[in-house]
Length: 336
Image (cartoon, rainbow, N blue to C red; front, side, top):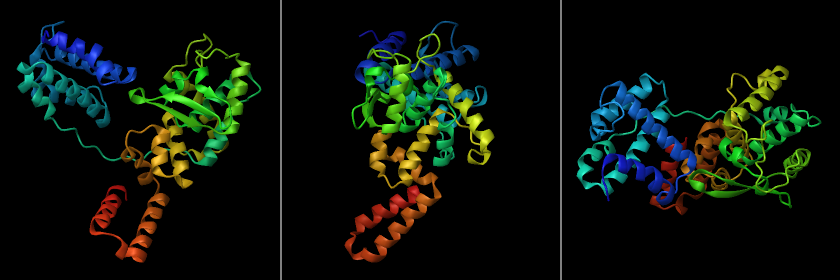
């Protein structure tokens, strides 16, 4: 195998990421953007001749400089900074195993630690706020029924905005119980149940817009093209502003974007007593650890876990082994 740097980068993106790692198109685009930014940084700092890729770019000093540049010059968040580092580490592991002559160089990158960030709570809307929001579109108008269907499905399914954009008519099943099939991160497919009310709205919308072909995108713009992320955000914000004028106290100063509806659905499921494992599968998280952020973000939920844990310890202390007690306490430390 030709192990020149350009060939390694090309094979990483065209063969390894999609075929071996099985990464989604969006993840591959994100990785691509990382390399575009890195080469832009290298040119700006004169680390390599214009238009030429040099292995010297991948020194520890240059990569840490790149990460600092992202934060200071590009004003990215710590989370985004760490995502860029993760992309470079993924390439470093690939390059190390396919070009041993670069092993020492790429090991330096693998040794770079992600930057710690302050843990944030998730933004979400109350049930009353969601109910008011869904009353804003006029279902008797052409755009109104589409927007109501879009917002209803975005909340009901808890799907990511890109998952919503990618949904096609054939992904919907209106038989009881109604479901929708979405493709999430890593091309993982999951089937999500939706309420009969939401299914009725979406069915009415599909008939109004004559969406009958299974390959048709469910949500499109005036040009019959799939909605973009910014298009979905625009529709959401339009109705949020309308609802705010009616009951501003329900929304406060929250910056409501499409992912907030996903957070809201997860919180409402948790508040209703739904198990975290089910919520993990519902949202398409790879680990329940990711889902636990919802338990940490709601004071009432945290208090519930504390009270239940206290009752379990007080009433059945002798039933717990030392290992079980240690596991329980470790969970509480992480999540309370």
